[in-house]
Image: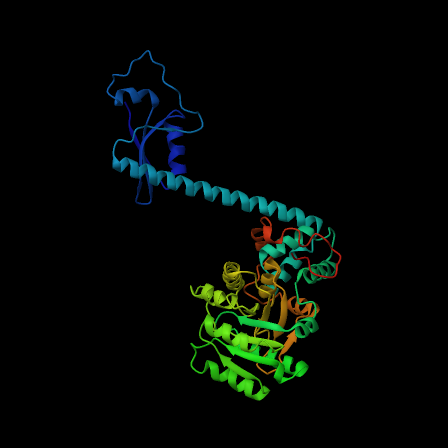
Length: 420
């Protein structure tokens, strides 16, 4: 009987040694992690009976193990062997996942090379999108529908039209201002809610007069939070009311029911704050319908923006209804506008206004597709350490995110954006 121990850096190398020295019918008795690798104890199948005590009937045929892999002796002798078997299984899973990733990368490279052969400009177009701040997922979705044979100039024009067609914006400011109603501006801390509230208030005053507008604030956390809005209100000649809870809000909206428009400046809350649903519930609990506008910081990373929309949209769904749209802020401070545009395209969240500075009301503008997309794609491609090189592109072209499915199938503009 020959029981042997095999040492190797990985399970795969150890199993290869076992197959070479004992054969494909080898039986693995135990395995464990050791310094610099793993230790596997194995023996030949014909020696297994001797190990068991030699009392196994010789006339009973034993099932033969599969030729392509060793078998494991059962039951496990003790707790140590059980732990070792579990560690071995986890190591094997890691090895398999590593092999899968390698195969996917190789397949992605082959697919990318084929696409490059059919449309050489795809690499330049994808790098342009990544330089603008758009996600690799959106870039892949666009390249899936890019007309074959497009050069860089025609390809970029097609991409611009596809993005413009799918960027949701407010159809008409006149409808919003003429309709009036109650609007609450929500979002994380520091996104510019109070200043944007004042800018919207100024636009409303210019159209309907100060007597038709009222301002509310729920910001009782920041020192001087009320005073900032009161100063704006005094300049505009608009009354400002502070509310502390849902009861205060219902009473205030009842008293202001004759106003054409009411703007609510809410307290800033991180998307990870557990009280976000409570804030939304307070707005939804008012007898008067409150339309909620989410403010998105254009300087934020795409993952952060995605998390913000998820948090506030989920809270809105729990409270009833959905976000009415969004306002993009700090456009004057961002280098890459693509991240925030990618977010609103993915979530089909209509953009109402964009803010380009601190001045009230000059730095608030109605969202314009042409301006937003052209500005985003004007970002320089060269010189940025965050834009992948041409040889790195195959690693970012695996699969298409289902959130973009069907968005870019048509190459011709069709008027309004394709969102539900």
